[in-house]
Image (cartoon, rainbow, N blue to C red; front, side, top):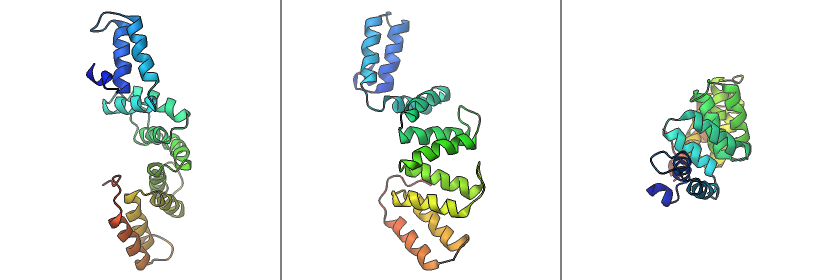
Length: 186
């Protein structure tokens, strides 16, 4: 109840469910409606529900909520949904479906989705292997500030296909080192 009172959308929704069903509290439809209304007023509530369900490893619920938000155009939920299909979490692993959601998010400038598309094209996962497209998506992610992607194109420029250019590789790597992005991933 504390988290619901502090404004956590998922906790508000779950508390509404408890009042609606009478689980651990006296059944009270008016109180359930109050908490459902508070939930509905939250910005990005569907994404919040999806994230919370994912953290609790209730993947079916995460898919449900991410799908709702993704259909409404939320690029973070689109990318999260793509990840669930990419890794087969709560759904059968499906690279084609993952690509569909990553594409929708990437078109809105979501750098995580752009990075995943780069990985898919590099590894030929659900798509025909294509180093040129892998580089393009990684560069897009880089221009949006995704720090890890900055090191990847440097390695591709130096090692994979096309003209090998150690100076360009060093420039990309140095730009990654000076980026203060909190999205750096191992």
